Length: 249
Image (cartoon, rainbow, N blue to C red; front, side, top):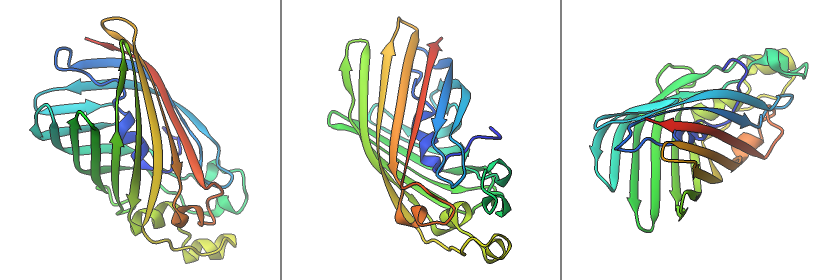
């Protein structure tokens, strides 16, 4: 995890469980690889091997980097407290540009809050509101998505559209440039406000047999002006992808 960089926690939340365990077989294990495009100037795109560990119980659930406790759960609605690991970070020692090497480190953190899903014939609504619980950014992130699943026998495709709101503290920690950093590096001081970043996503799953499943997920995010206008950033969009294989017990 030490060299993995992504620009938004929202990436991790929906795809941590791209191979969800079902009620009959609540435990799913597997292996996967994440690709993430770096938004930072001089940053490098990263590939990260990651185990798939999903568990679905009556009260507790786990989806690799995210876990929670159900406050309400039925066939249509699920509301839960949740904790999620955020791999968002910036390490100046990994950067290729001299000025960018003089910036402060932005660290990974743990986010906590609530998540809600509504499942209906017309689609799925997924939303979560999470805040930094380790006092790294003191930021808040709200993600809202609409998805619709198409089934073709053992193969399914689920496109989605959504947006991520990031608070001012979240953006300032990961994309802002403080006065002392500007004085040290010559990079212009930057203090962003809160922002909305829209995205489209697509997941596909293929059931190889009764227990084995292969999946792929991709998301294209259009970075908000508050993010792409940062002197730390040289992209106006970001592509992320996750692919893997899993076995349900």
